[in-house]
Image 1 (spheres, rainbow, N blue to C red):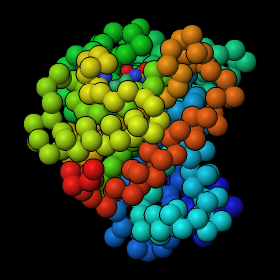
Image 2: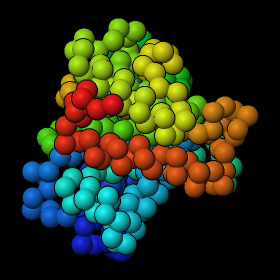
Image 3: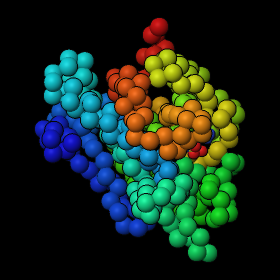
Length: 293
Ligand code: 0X9
Ligand code: ZN
């Protein structure tokens, strides 16, 4: 994509993994000298190794965006020309590779940190530093929700932290996961709503709007279950970025769980196209949804 659309896309590297792989992404801007002056939005996927659809979806959405831009689609051209768009489709490439490298899926979730006791993996979506370790995560290295020894102990979460903090124009963040067909918003570490009523309302309204397009269920993250140290509690809690987690298709284990097959990709991309454009659009001021119907 960076090669095919080199006028407006740059391949970026935001850091390295535990095993030394590059964590790569795409930066889309009409004018890279001015990009920081435009409203920013960030999409990410692949925190969890077995959630391959969470990698494919942001990639394919971005491919579609670039194709439409090239084709002169007026809505897309107006958006891309006036926004600063960041995509990190694979936050956990070590885990993703480990999950597929034997030829049989391993249902791996965590990164590939070799912990001091020899047990592998930290759950990257329990390792972010806001309300870290306050519930729904574990200090047992054998656990699939092992939080790590400290907030941001992992190079993968550190890379996201540094990148998002460096791009101060980012107002909206979406982290793709699978599965269950949900649109989630903070908080995840507590049943309390966000104390800023307007910010709470913005999350609710945007989640509901997007759910109307993709057919998912909008709810507060903790309504799914309490979990601390996830991406969005940090990005909203620390940086006040309006933040969402999508749990993509399928709805259930019966629909294929983490491994629904490549045949589902197109349908999932199509149903999430409007939410994707909506988030890019509203990065100029997400609070304007308070005045929209
Ligand atoms: O548990 C997670 O990290 C996410 N679900 S997944 O099946 N993809 O692992 C959900 C995170 C939502 N956040 C909270 N419930 N805090
Ligand atoms: Zn996940």
